[in-house]
Amino acid sequence: MKDILIVAHFTQVPGEQGNGRFWYIVDMLANKGHDIEVVTTQFSHRTKKQRTLTDQQLNQLKYKLTMLNESGYKKNVSFKRFYSHYIFSRNLKSYLNNRKKPDVIYCAVPSLDAAYVAAQYASKNNIKFIIDIQDLWPEAFKMVFNVPLISDVLFYPMNKKADYIYKTADEIIAVSETYKRRALTVNNKCQGKSVFLGTDLTYFDKVSKENLVSKPVDEIWLAYIGTLGHSYELNCVIDALSILKEKGINNIKFIVMGDGPLKSQFQEYAKAKQIFAEFTGRLNYEEMAGILKSCDLTVNPIKANSAGSIINKVGDYAAAGLPVINTQESQEYRDLISEYNSGLNCKNGDPIDLSESILSLYKDSTLRKKMGENNRKLAEEKFDRNKTYPKLISRTLLG
Image (cartoon, rainbow, N blue to C red; front, side, top):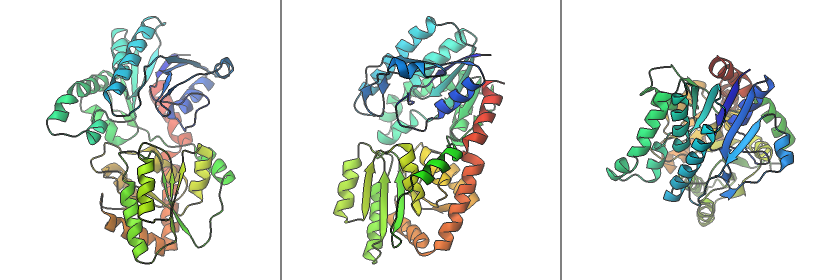
C-alpha cells in the first residue's frame, strides 16, 4: 500500500457543493487500502470565505484532510489573489518539510505557486510527481487582461513556473488533449494522458430522474450551467434569442443555472431585451441535474481566445442527452461535436449565426432527439468516470 499525497488547491471539502474530480479519485484509492492525505486551502475560492469543519465531519472521512492557511481575496483576477496563492504555497512548503515523505505526490495544476513548491519538493526528494492539469495559467488570465507586450512581461514569471512544473512531472494527466499537449512541449519524460473531468453517469441518471421538473408542453427550454463570469458570453445568447423573438418566436425559455460576478449584468441585459429567461442562481448538483434533464437544448457560449478546452458543463450536457449549441473556439471540443454529430458549432460572438442554429433545432424535434442521443453516446464513451477514472488510477497513480 502506498502513501499518496494529493495537493488540490481548488477543490471542495465535506459539506460543500460540487462534483469534484479529486474526491472521486480519493474514494477509489482509499477503497483500495492506500493511505491518502488531501492538502488544500482553508479559503474557499467559490464563497470567498474561510472554511470551518467539525471534528465529526473530519472523523467520517476515509482519508486525512489538511487545510492550510491562505489570506484570501475578493476578486478572481487581482494582485491580492496572487499574494494569497503565495501565502498558501509558503505554508505548503513548510508543511511538506515537516511531513514524512510520501511515495507519490498527485498535484492539481493550478495554482502554479502550490504546484511549483510540490514539484521542487518531489524533485529534491526523488518522489514520484504526477500533475493533473485542470486549466492553463497564465493563458486563462491573458484572456481577461490582454495588453500587447505588457501582458507578456507581466505573466512571464507565471509562464516560467508552469514550464518548470510541466517539465518536472513524471506523469502528466490533463482534462483535455489540448492541455496535455501544452505540457508536453517542455516534457519529454512521459507521453501524458488526457482524462475528461466527466461525471458519474450512474449517479447523474439517478438524481436527474429524481429531480425532474414539470415543463409546459408548449415551451422549449435552452439551458446554460456554470459560472456567470467574464469567460462566458451570455449576452450573445440573449441577443440571439432577441433576434428570434423579433421573428415571432416567444416560447424559448433561457434557463441559466449558476452564479458569478456578472450575474446581475446578465439579468439586467435579459430584462432590457425582454427575453423569456430564468436565473436560478447556484444549485446543488442533484437539483441542477434534474432541471437540465428537463430541458430541450443546451448552449456553450465561450468568449473568443479562451484557454478553456473540455470544460465541466459539456460533460453534464452530454450526460443529460441534450444537443449542444457551441460557440467555443476550442478545436478539440468542436471536433468532438462534429465527430459524434452531437450538436451545432457556431461562429464565436455572432448572435445571428447562433440564432440560426437555435432555430434549426427549435423547428426540428427529430434532429434534437438524434443529436441528444449522440451526445449521450459521447458521455458514455468519453465522460463516464466509472470507465475512465479506474484506468487513470491503475496506469498512472499505481503503475
